[in-house]
Image (cartoon, rainbow, N blue to C red; front, side, top):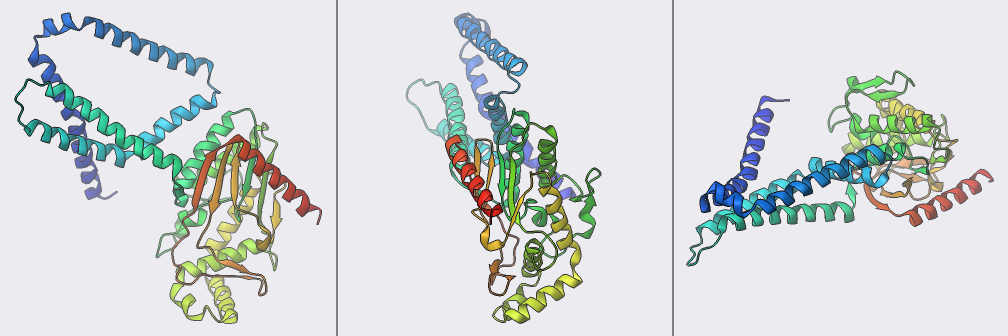
Length: 384
């Protein structure tokens, strides 16, 4: 990490702490300046007793919950949501702090003709504004789609970790390749990071060195498969064999060419034969990333029970079902499959890794309906 980034973070956290403590400091000034310490304690002893009792009750409830309800999905979900809010709600926290302090400062500049407890009121404003911004953030997180592959992987991993602690349930993946985000995390815009690839010590599968979300996804799926508690693990993916039916490899070949040869792609996109030759030629010179992506996807598919491998034009709507949680995925920007030419065609003017758009919903009835539909599709596919 660069020294300027470290200095910037220190300054940011310092000012954030000041913004957080300033309204509390004002409130304490108002408390102890308006009355003497002894008078204040005498007049408010009952409030202190009630607050202490409430704190003790809350601590006892959470302690009993952690001791006796360790497998409670609701409890784990609540704790995860609080942690997620603390980790990902920084813009809401900081904006709430900034706006509340500005309003408090303006409030103290307004002249008053009557005695008003401005200190207590300012603290109420402080708490209220932060609550409003956090509420907006939570509402957006719940209702708005998940935009971005990395954001999707973070939520998926949290749900899979909770799912692993449960006693059983359905785990269904419908997606061209099960190593979601492997390609996105393996490259940057200009250079393929060859040194970033490693190999998993247990499976020998290609992995990414470092703390990457896709590595956590593979670990979670492997742990679920090993646990023996989840027998209903099914997947529908592109055929990943070698040769003419190796649709997964063809997809990655075209995708890799589309990302790194955008200008050449635009120039010859109308000439399908020239395009196919260019894609194959680029693959011959840059096999490493494509081969690692395909191999990684193959290994992850082994964590499911006999995955169904289909042609690209036979793949149904990409979706993930984890227990009662449903992820409906839209992968706009991926190369499309030309049935006539039997190869993938890159999209014009697309030169960035695809950012998946996903809608997440906890709905048992919807999850069961999708599972039934996928089961019917799998049965039909295997009988044809």
